[in-house]
Amino acid sequence: MARQTVAEQFVDVLARAGARRMYGVVGDSLNPVIDAVRRHPSIEWVQVRHEETGAFAAGAEAQLSGRLAACAGSCGPGHLHLINGLYDAHRSMAPVLALAAHIPSAEIGTSYFQETHPDRLFTECSHYCELISHPAQMPRVLQTAVQHAIGRSGVAVVGLSGDVAGQDAPRQAAASAMVTRRPAVRPGDAEIDALARMIDEAGAVTLFCGSGTAGAHAEVMALAERVKAPVGHALRGKEWIQYDNPYDVGMSGLLGYGAAYEAMHEADLLILLGTDFPYTAFLPEGVRTVQVDIRAEHLGRRSRLDLAVWGDVRETLLALLPRVRPRTDRRFLDRMLRKHADALEGAVAAYTRDVGGHRPIHPEYVASVLDEEAADDAVFTVDTGMCNVWAARYLSPNGRRRVIGSFSHGSMANALPQAIGAQLLDRARQVVALSGDGGLSMLMGDLLTLPQHGLPVKVVLFDNSSLGMVDLEMMVGGFLPYGTTYPATDYAAIARAAGIHAVRVEEPGEVRAALREAFAHDGPALVDVVTDPNALSMPPHVTGRQLAGFATTTSKLVLSGGVGRMIQLARANLRNIPRP
Image (cartoon, rainbow, N blue to C red):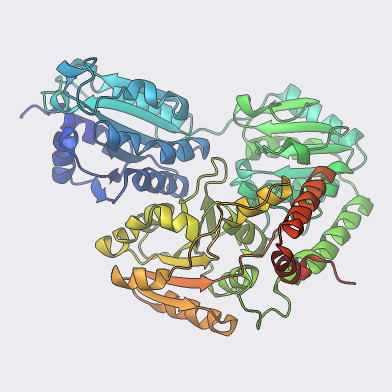
């Protein structure tokens, strides 16, 4: 049997670890690996137009499948382009193996053409980052990288020079076994008993859930029923916990809605389940707090804890439930549910009430119609910014839909690349990218990737010719909006030129028909909806500092002759005012 090259062994190890695709852009330092992928029966090379797209796509595939995904960049600028998408994958806890091809090994350290140091570059956005400088390091270094990516749920990076990749790999007697799935982790009895005592001793209990509640919906509902607790969620917990939830009080945070904020602050005991919620301003200070998380480093880094529980949420609750006394008193739960219903009727539902004739089109209306027309098992990828707001408030989870975005890293331009990875994972499943025009235009070259690979991704473009979230952040900070607008652009025309079915929508009465047409089209489609740039989103709790900043901006706008802008803002956002 002929000996494998390092590149062939590299690809073979990835295939055995579960990787089915490698995303990237070819380059000479990658040639041996690309050729090995070409000849391998289990791994597909996915050509994209920008390596950042490849990293985002790999991260999305890994989040949806739970399996290892892979991407690659050629030496120097090629692998540098991976870094933003890898940061996102790492912070989203997606198992991704990135190959950072390197310059010829004899030239390392000489400031050679395109020289970088990948073993230094990617250390902050990975659990493992090493350079293979000799064939004898294979396959151990790559297997170690794979185990880090899967075992710690994040990115691992391996640097490899093209000349080393082309050399013979060391002979092996047998392939080494690798872990490809994470275990369930149960806390000790002492922590479970302590948590049960705290719950039994507390008056009002609130549960606040993040992405760590994936797979634990039934157990969270059982605990909420047992202790009559309202259940709030962070953005990344929405898809796992909001559906079939009679205890739901909405979402807290900058994009939040409903009564989650009140339920957290008025409780005697707050239990944080699988969430690394970053917005400390929305967390209570005088409430006893427990945090349950599979990652010990998350425990207590956002708020002071009265009890830290290290373990898987589902396993923790399974052990906890028999030890907690059931309750019959629903007064706190019912009061929070009424507050939540009032908030939805007032502020959130008002966004879509009687707006069918409003022009420019309300983005909230578009999101609401999209929610009604999309498939029950659709995958939504969501751009950072105002698209996050509309997705958080108007997309309805049901246990079968998925919603992913750059929710922890907060990068722009993520929706289209993530949709590519999601669609390649399952070509028959409906994948919808909620893109902003700012985000789409950043990596617009990869619109070409959709028809190239025959991917039926549906892009719903919220086209407001502005960076709407940045606009709002400037106003809340007391600054005049500046540098946040773009010239009006017909993205539908651009998409059609790229071979994509596309339609531009400027009338609200055409939104539903345009979405239906796109969803029925057998191939990629883009719906360019011209939306109101003056639409604002209000968090469930507005601080005095934010109000002061907004008032300062209002004064500056008026004093600088911007009265017309203030009138437009007021007219566009009357729907924010709760109605009797």
